[in-house]
Image 1 (cartoon, chains in turn cyan, red):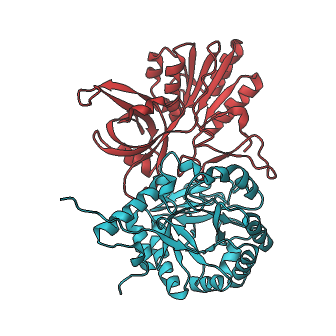
Image 2 (cartoon, chains in turn blue, brown):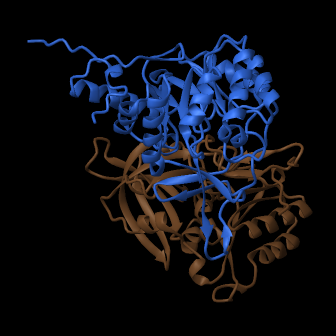
Length: 309
Length: 272
């Protein structure tokens, strides 16, 4: 006898953006999308987030820029990117052909630049939303300054909110004393969703040369090593604000992704795992569906914040 | 392409240097000399990242165990330098690996009328073997191999077996001339004025010297670089080098993984 299999629902909504499943690719780990087209189906994931874009092209930091650490890696790329204009003219045309929401990650050196960037993309229909980067630990100006001061963060968010009607996500830094203070400041200023966490500032030392390994001395730690910290922060922020959260930090497989959802995330981002396995985000989306099916869960939304205490 | 592979052999060819043969899908044979592979040494999270290796050799051998009667293989030649290569050295026949290959941009084979000069330092000889195998089909190939000591000179016999004329130099004089291989190469270039093309892979000071000689003598030269990288496909931007137009105002960074690992020496900035 043939049995009808009903597939679980994986669709979720973040800041008005409908995602076919909760898996997004983290900024700076997925290039501009095209790099991964040979390895996976770009229409199998919920959304793509671009490399952080600035008003002008940015060279990034000197090398060495990356170093492996136990269960993770440190990076100090320094937001090397083609700039917003080159993105629109040379990267967006390809992304247009892919039926998956594109969210642009925006980064400004000054308060005003955030506003200019948001205004520039406001009229572009193919851009589904904005993720405001106030948390890069590897650039001297802006970035982390806005990400560690709740007043400055609120100013950035309010300015971007005024400059565009696009769905507005803010990416938070974990390098603060109380992430809930930052979360509340951003939500009060108009953030419709929060993504967390960006990398944890760290460093590596080469004993034989007695020098720092990275040219930038410090870098951002990512990968499985930071997952426990990220889970804890998502869990805390979920209790502090009402907006949907996107969990980031060491998601390597479907199990990790579902743990973030239990802690209170509506969606997750895959970052470092993209470097190891270019099809990681697609594999994770499939794995989530399978887990839901195997465990008799009909809708992934039942998992969000469903942590038992 | 990402694929699962099985180790066929893993032999220590010189103290601290290993040559590993592994299974690969047939489409890997479309790789060009100079391209590389990213190897995941273990499925655990430490070490987390893949390791890049130039393709040393590839081909097919007879086996009764596949439908088509043959099996495609890849070979890498590597030096044990840390945790990842240390674990790789411990693998045995039948162990499994996860590989992405082929990656990057390989060597331009040039035209047949030119004499081809290969310059390799230590483990930098690895990608030059596959290149030599292609080049010897239609032209004269000379190899200049250098190392600190004779144990750093790998697989010279394999090159000779291809019909490559080899010249050797070591820092301590334990094999070939004592001194820098670039000086031996320069002597040869000065003595023969026929059209030539240079191919170099090895430590940065050696590549810098070769690029300088190539510029001085107006000889086309390609170099294959090594760099720390996380992804191997142009996404992490961790492996960049300075291009020839680089300045603080006009940044010109190139990805070793995607724009290289093989570059025309004139496309790069060789200042420190």
